[in-house]
Image (cartoon, rainbow, N blue to C red):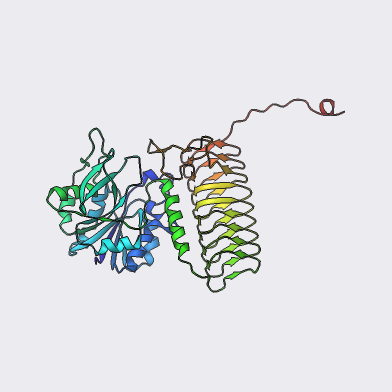
Length: 453
């Protein structure tokens, strides 16, 4: 069993726009907890003694969150050109360590699969079956329990993506000599100038080292693009809620006798489920949260701290709502609300809404195209059709909408942006931009002489 773990969290997360603009991508909340914290907490539970998180952009948010962890050390590797150089930032810390594990900070791995890679022999790679169809990835093939090939931009041959690594100290030499470009590509494909750990593994294989392949058995989430937030959140929320086998009420928590609870509920300190609330399945709630006045909550929802949910609003299955949010006045929501989002007055929202965002009264989003198809997205300029949740909307942090804005399926808005009142938004809005509707008006004579008797 390895005792040291390195987690790589220094990337810029550009494919995750707009949620990379005000945070380290690994701090995106999934089931009200940062992505990064899921694997950290699992690793500590499994007995890992030292965890090194290598950060880059927005490192202070990571530092602050993990400052309460006694066995976690954060190292800033700002402007790291790739995962190889990010990992090399930990070399001196692991100089006397024979075996260690490496994980990507933007993944969530089932605890049993983490245990398997931690207990495996050195030079073992944890792999998960590919879901993406875009080919914009580096992936591997497996034969007889070992990695048989590694290719970038594979047209059809590769089957698995990389999830985690178990190395011995010999890897440092290979890392230092890894090429500046990933050259294991299909003919005609192109590679960025960036040093990838997958290229290091290819060099190890060419050097005669057999790399054992270990396939994931449980859920694996790789958060690379905005819709992956919804996929991971829904899966983790369902898993956490499925563990509830009875009601769990902390000190000061209570459930009103008029509430209709059809599953099990976990309430944090001083939280309340009030009059005429309907909870149709299992629900997890943090501290000092109020759910009241006829709110309807479908099965498998996670709510954080200091939240208000009420006034006949509707929360759909698999959603998570983070600290200090307000959902009320017949608002309908499915997805992820980051911190301090306000949903007031008669609206329908499906997707991810960034931190500190205010949604104007009557704002709605389209959830179904007239052709019943999937909405194409642009990721770093490339057209892509997601394998799931392509029709969700993705609103950036510190943004807002005016009254009766309409957001068409799949649109994104950047951080610090504004969609004006009455706007029908049908394409992505860049960060720090405002869009208003241009309206032509006609004023003419009117009165009893035109409309009277």
